[in-house]
Amino acid sequence: MHIVDIIAKKRDGIELSQSEIDWLIKSYTSDAIPDYQMAAWLMAVFFRGMSDTETAALTMAMAASGDMVDLSQVPGVKVDKHSTGGVGDTTTLVLAPTVAAAGVPVAKMSGRGLGFTGGTIDKLEAIPGFKVALECNEFIANLQRHNMAITGQTASVAPADGKLYSLRDVTATVESIPLIASSIMSKKIASGADKIILDVKVGNGAFMKSREDAIKLAETMVRIGQLVDRETVAILTSMEQPLGMAIGNSLEIKEAIEILQGRGEPLLKEVCLTIGSYMLTLGGKAQNYEDGRRQFTALLDTRQALAKFGEFIEAQGGDSSILQDTTKLPQAQFIQEVYSGRSGYVAAIKAAQIGYAAMRLGAGREYKGQTIDLSAGIVMQCRVGQAVQKGQALAVIYTNDKSKITEVDFLIRQAILFADKPVPSPPLILGIVD
Ligand code: URA
Ligand code: CA
Image 1: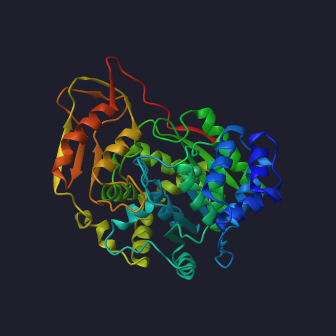
Image 2: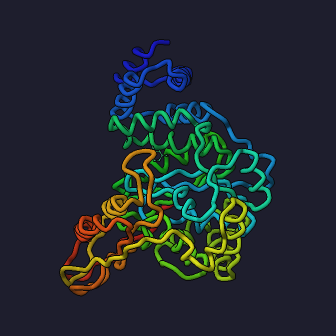
Image 3: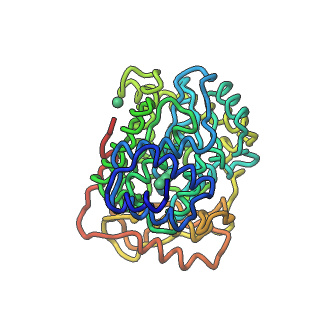
């Protein structure tokens, strides 16, 4: 096979065969195809798209490019949950212990934050002593013992995706539905779960800006799951404002603990309840969605989910006394409120810009491998639809770098749009694809 022929075929809109796609991914992973030719192929895919058959072949080729984790020795239906990336999205830290407390094993490989989105692995590192890199045997042992294990994405799982994602990032080919779908599903399939729940974010703070595109992405991923016999459900949720109030690693751990205590932010809690009910249903512990909701609420109210979170933290070497005393989490030196310059109704909060502001404080990375400040971030004090008086606090900045406050204060105030008349709050759950 010749790479130039494969690029030309895709350029001309001709469907590629499974063996061509297999060869392409194998050759690229082993460095036999250079980045410039792969970049040309990615751009051809960006414009021409891929058929369902091609997308499934690409997904399986990427999944098979490294280790395929075998969880068959762990009893029960293993469920994995993945979000397409958001701001103030702390759902995993609530969902995993709650679903595990119900007896459904949660096997999760998570990523770090990049750009304006956060990542579960960074958040967990805010817990003193917590170990985010587990060997495969430790991962399985913890899963068997505690029904729950979270580890960082290792280079050995779907290495083709790691390489391709970096190339897409610098060639303007990220926002392609077949490329996003195969990227996400290849990692989920290689990491071994039986059932997959996808939280597809929609809105100004997400890759998918419209509900239409989000449905297309969700349908593509659900079909791939069906083709490889991993039941997949996608839930479309709004990213028209930060999901929780906290954006930043320590701050988000604290917010997750509040929800696990049965309190906490209602929008974040509602998304957890919705996704959690489907996880309990897919995992065979709930009869249906309503039963799942009832069980999920009970696990929060009885503090069983909180106890499971503590057990999980200890199992991965962390200090679970943070659950009683959150001041043991990294704390920022400077705390500054952001005041509203006018009275009115909050019409929109640009989630991506709030995420960017938190990144400027050091809560996230501008480039791969950058050291972050686990204590830094923002806690929002307003929601879309809310009435605000001039001089009222819109948000609170947490930082160790006083020189960043003026810039971040400006970024936050710019991200919040006002209206003179009441504005309805945007719908939170935008659809289910299964
Ligand atoms: N998340 C992924 O893992 N891959 C993408 O392509 C986009 C979001
Ligand atoms: Ca189905």
